[in-house]
Image (cartoon, rainbow, N blue to C red; front, side, top):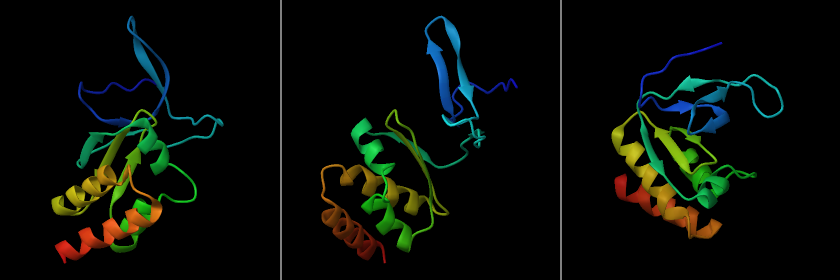
Length: 125
C-alpha cells in the first residue's frame, strides 16, 4: 500500500530503506512481522534527544521518569530509536511539563528522576 504524505508530516513508522537517491520506504509491520499502527502524529510537540535517552525511555521495566509522570498525568508519547520524541497531552502545560521532565532526566538516576518529577508536579499544583 502506498500512502502519500505532505512534506513535514510527523509519522510514527519503521524505516525499511532510506538513502539519498530514493524515497524512504516505511513499514507498518514491526521487525517480528506483526502489523503495527502506521500513522501521522497530530498535535503535540516533537523534540530531539540523544539516542541514549531514547533507549532509556524505551527500556523495560518502564523508565522511571515516564512511570512517575504516568501516575499523575495523562499523556501520549512516541519514542524513536533516532532520538526523536513526540509528546501529546490534553493541555499545552502538560505537554511542556512532560517534555521538560524527559529532557532533564537524561543524567539522573532512577531515584533522582522520581524526585524531579515530584518537584515539577508540586510546582504546578
